[in-house]
View 1 (cartoon, rainbow, N blue to C red):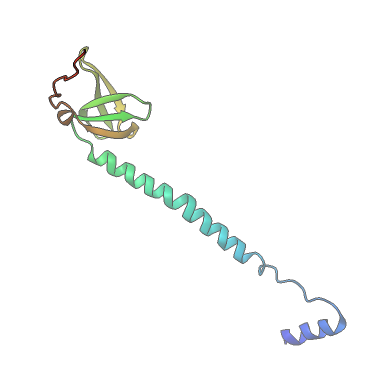
View 2: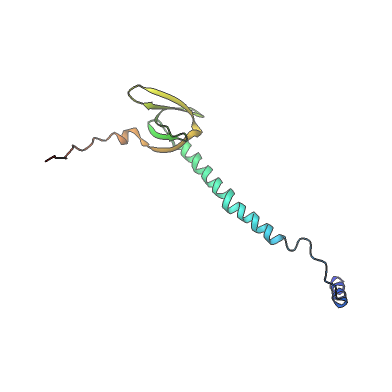
Length: 122
């Protein structure tokens, strides 16, 4: 019946009424796919990596905070980390665990004996 009505409208020289959602479905699906693959998925991956990083930190790890402060972890609580930021003055600062941006390594691994200075001046 619908095809007959379209044919009769065409015979009369009138265009059939446009399909209200036919032209919008493809761009809408394309937009949803774009948001998912370029916004939601990368954020989820980044959040998972951050959770793995925070779960893997341990005492004596050298870290850098999101504020740019370098320190060595001396104590870890559930949502709090104490960092030693100055060895000589024994300065310790408490941070939220979520403020750890990167793990640089462990303090023991960085305290390797250095090679003797072989620079000879002439």
